[in-house]
Length: 119
Image (cartoon, rainbow, N blue to C red; front, side, top):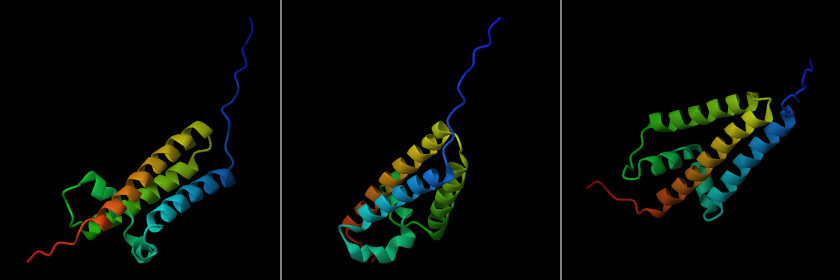
């Protein structure tokens, strides 16, 4: 009777996870403001770009969308950084990266659309 020894899944160090997370956010931030550095003053509204992609015909997102977006990114960060196994971490990291790409595109879409008065 032989017992096969399987390798334990690789753990990922906390500093590595944090640095990858920071790099994803820095790349998203830079790609958001490169075309228009003035847009930096709207960094607090970053999550609204994601909603602009999800709801393309809506322009008036309320404060609850903003809070919900930041809450979701915070939740994703806590859960993602808590993952010690590489495979689980990279699953959450991939989700973050896809959402950040969509968010950046949404921000650019919002800034390209003309502001329409409701008069």
